[in-house]
Image 1 (cartoon, one colour):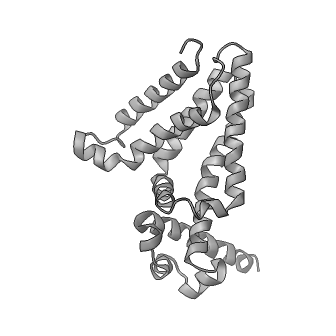
Image 2 (tube, one colour):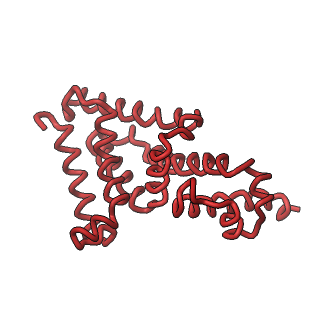
Image 3 (cartoon, rainbow, N blue to C red):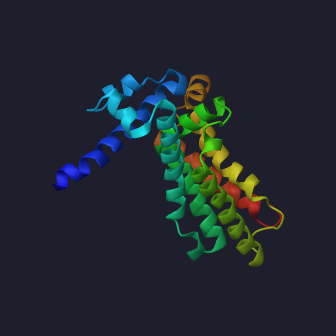
Length: 209
């Protein structure tokens, strides 16, 4: 009985995992529900039963991937750390998440191609991502109050500084490798760029930075 009750959840999980791979590989327009079904032990009909259609499944994938990075940030419990230590931890986590989840980077790029029209219809994602800036602003305020951060930094600008480098080195890794002959996924290169981002952000927020 227990095995049977878990089957729908396992099937749904398998479909989402297959859809992440398919959408990341081919985008929304190129992805095929038949191919997603072929990646799993299920059928096209079952996918429509669980999700309603390709665009609804794509929206579920977006929620899944954005939720992943938000969960990683929330698990940091930054309020327990001193402001600069908290900020450095956030930078490292953001960098590491993007490096470990190129499918997330790919799907964000795909959604930008579609002018974020699916994202705009997902209030849960919008609400969860609004908390990113609220949490970052709270961290900035703590740092300013303790004299370790300079005032006047916009939370959105800081978020873009952190996520921008983390995103770009993954989204453009193939062209950068072709142009400059360096594989950004290699450990020493990634460690160097991770440390650089931590240092850049720390200098940016510091008084006189």
